[in-house]
Image (cartoon, rainbow over all chains, first blue to last red):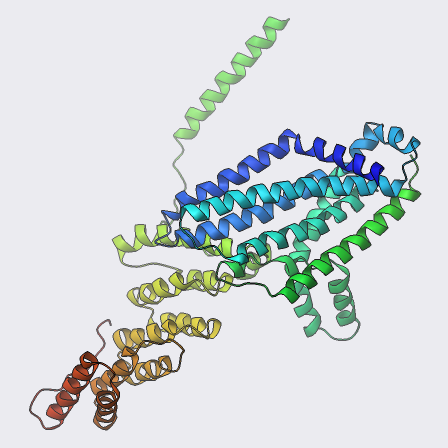
Length: 253
Length: 229
């Protein structure tokens, strides 16, 4: 546990100090604040636009950071040869990956909270009544980032950062279109239907974590929905992590 | 040698400036400013997955700029109905779009598109009374279809939290369409069931007006054509 903690802490410090990360977060905060200006053009829909833009910014920038940083988590260490220093110690490859994942997750948690607080401050400034739905939406974004972290970590164990980013982005887009995949499966027949259904269950269904469009209209997720979404995220992330450990353990360098 | 590079760079910059001056003389492409470009719905919904509300907001802002700029001057717009349809497909609960869309399409000479928009609003928002109410108003003011408007105002009354004036509007539609028996029955019922003096007074006044119109004591109040044609 101490080894995992040490690697996680180191990863957290490295990523949180990343200048590009700081720039992305600053951009996100500025974007959320600038939604106030957009609101003046919206013919009375300023509150709606601020709500929509804020949640979208948290989701999109969180995903960008998870993909951008996560895909180079392992490859950076491999290129700098620092991984050899770590693995010559009594640190298993699984512990190494665990530490990396937890470190990145800690960073993402801090970022989601920071962006969420900025968003909350702007809503409070606009005198929008507080709704637990907004907190839930941010939590669901965080669950999505847990899954994305595991995904990008998997890709980073066996391919280059550029390809890993491409794969992760493709899965992100497909994941958000999972309901469309299910609709296609329902309309198909025979082996095509089975294939599409298989793809639907095999690929991560990121639409599960998408509350953005509903909470702006007062929707609040039930405890059952929240619990199941959390279970899905953790279970799928664990599966991805297991594959990542397997791949990384077989890798020779 | 280093000096030669600098001279070369200065020459290249001079060439760039000359090219820029030449480009300034090229006339800009003629764009139909009275055209609202609507991207394919399938493309937008596919790309916007998870960010449909934000996409709808973006198109809404663009539509407002177009509507404010062009329609206020030309009193005519192109592609208005497809744009309203796209925005409401992305965000079916975007109330302001339905409100503006209904009246804008009516103003643009597209009453059927306005009714279709509000019909889709009703389907997507089954608990909101304002959509059948607005559809009724569009049918009343835009199409002069008083009986269909009456049906909408009747439907409004079934919604939880619906305003009490919907019954009066229904009665008024029957009255305007010349359906005396229905109008009489409705105003009578409203006068008897009214819970406040003001509503009772309005109902009784209209009841008397219908009776006077039947008796020929005053001219008919129904219109032969809609306000907006």
